[in-house]
Amino acid sequence: MARNVGVECKKAKSMLNKSERKFVAKTIEKANIKHITKHATQRSHERFIQITKDEFQQEMNFGNFIEVQHYEDGSVRYLFRGKHVHKGTPKGDANVVFVFVPKTGEIKSCWFNNVDDKHATLDMSIYDENANIFEWVK
Image 1 (tube, helix red, strand yellow):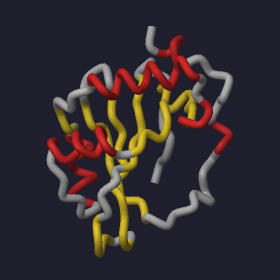
Image 2 (cartoon, one colour):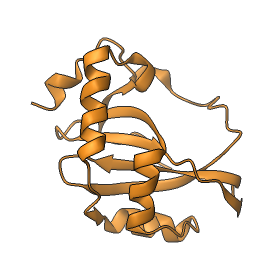
Image 3 (cartoon, one colour):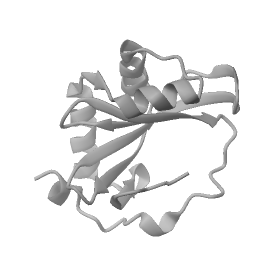
């Protein structure tokens, strides 16, 4: 499976400075999911994820913001991990993880992540704690 295709840089929540955290929090607070893309719909069916637009909204509002992603095409996306535990998924007990585009209000993709995942395969080389997310959203 291709991962991080088109991603130029990522900045994890723990890397954000105070003003960046405040900006992201305000963006999330104002965000309204308007559309689930065809790609996200296909992935949800392939991965046995049954979740509505309203449920995505709830997961975004009360789940965990993980990172900001900046793509080569200039788009900015936020990665979230929902709080709700889905029992008996192909990944065991899992949370839904999804990519949201604040500018368009779209859910771009989604997948299940086991609640006990320790992220041992996480590629940290694409993260940049010195990146300025305000440059990405101008």
